[in-house]
Picture 1 (tube, one colour):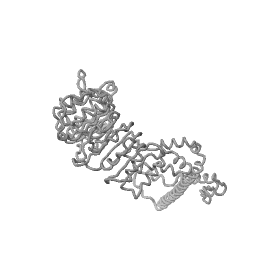
Picture 2 (tube, one colour; picture 1 turned 90 degrees about the vertical axis):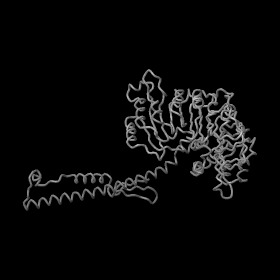
Picture 3 (cartoon, helix red, strand yellow; picture 1 turned 135 degrees about the vertical axis):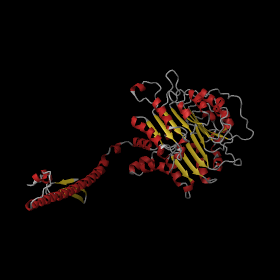
Picture 4 (cartoon, one colour; picture 1 turned 90 degrees about the horizontal axis):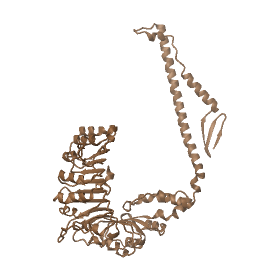
Length: 550
């Protein structure tokens, strides 16, 4: 870049491209500009200013009228000069801004040549590349998640060489049969670039069977680490040759695209039983012939269907389970519910339990047969409103009595009487987050207001309250809870039970909360207490992380 000073001030941005900002010496230019502005600021003087001080109407003489018109003309001329000067200055500022952008781009191009990143050893650059990749579960891998690695390989030749020599960049494999042309060229290319690294695969294939895809998956089975299979049951059965060849498999998610019926052939999942590192299994369709087909003795996380009669048994065969998301299946003819408690009286490793079901009438008969979970921290219970709560005091309450002592987060959506719910909550003194779904009412919420000092409060450590589903309560009841549990003053902050920080009201989209009540509740946001009122996101509510939707 060269700058020539003299008659013209010129900046040469690149070869053949120059910009002239003004046609005089720089100092003279700014001195002239300053003088011009000072001249425009010169006060306007008129010999008739004394007439403006009169408070009565004055009719000027003919000679005075000529002077008045002259003053108006002089002011109009001054305004025109100011406008012209403003336009010129604005044009100059735009030119300078545009020129600054050009010069900045010019400098950036040369700055790249001496950037410190070029001095990084290839192994350090390779490690940075791996850290820059997004961490996605297998079921969320798509073409979009593959893009970062491809971008790194197209910056320049040096980065391309480093990227291609970093096999960890290419371990996410996405196979979508609906968009394949005639061959698996992209997946095969990624497999080649990934070397011998363990693979994360997401496969979508809803046709009955594909020999090409099946053979590719089977050939890669020794390198499976995290796998999501959205395929037909026939395809699952066609993968039986992977049994005994899964040394690296840590998690598997299966979503069978074929709806299960009594006539549907059951897929045999016994070939996952010999995966020594397998810890997480998620199944989205009830097609397992026998829950014992999985290596329960080593699993730490399970998400899938379980027959009602088998719910307590999985904790006997799965002593290392830490997270369990159970979808109870209907009972089949011939199954008999046990009347005796399970052999295992306690399960010490489980920290998160998720129970959700549709129209099942026998689920409550099994809840009280669950072992005690002394380290349970999160519990999600949601049953269809048509589920009959049989003897809740003998089924539901024992679960909380055995496992509620360490609960920190609870989602409760079970239709039962408020007295039973209160009894369950008495057994959860450590609870910090409570969501009541579809069963919140004034009577139940009144239990959450603080009692007199000489009585033990319900949920003394409660910080977050969420009320979702249809609104069966009044705003004044919620306001009463806020005023009772919110530490608004310094004196309140010394109170051990005033810890409430936020309340969320999440009605269905078709159920509008009363405008006046909404306004009164939202006014607490201006005082430092958080109140959220918006429609319930049912997809997020049913998700495996229900606390994240609010």
